[in-house]
Image 1 (cartoon, rainbow, N blue to C red):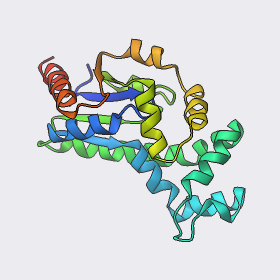
Image 2 (cartoon, rainbow, N blue to C red; image 1 turned 90 degrees about the vertical axis):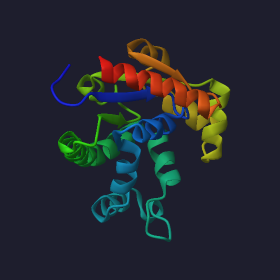
Image 3 (cartoon, helix red, strand yellow; image 1 turned 60 degrees about the vertical axis):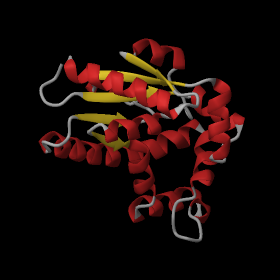
Image 4 (tube, rainbow, N blue to C red; image 1 turned 30 degrees about the horizontal axis):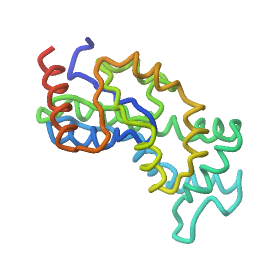
Length: 201
């Protein structure tokens, strides 16, 4: 294990509830780095929005001046080269902020561990920076229902999951697995157990 506080990576399918697990770990004293939140903030930044408008037109921003994530998702979902273009623009910015947050959490005596909640943990090489990996599991029907409530279609879910490492591989590479199908009390018990084991290691 690397020196310093343990670094815990969360993996799992889209809609598995990684954010719920991250929230429970935050309540237990972990500092959480939410890559989705950093991504949202970077998409809304004036520099990134200006570049996206140059590439894809004014439709990538809504009337409120924020990025239109549904429009961007359609563009990058339909064209892998455009997804790569977006990643090359945004990922270095997110990476810089992630490192700044990690340094801040390492220096904060009240933080017991650092959690990386990043959808592409394996795909962008962040898994190698983690001391432990927790796979958040959920049934396909449960995940489909969750992403539908966010405005995703089943086709969106299938397409994005095909562009990522398989769930079986992510599950096999994890040190721990928690199941998040519905019962938050049960999920909390699982997360508390895993966290106590990591801190005791």
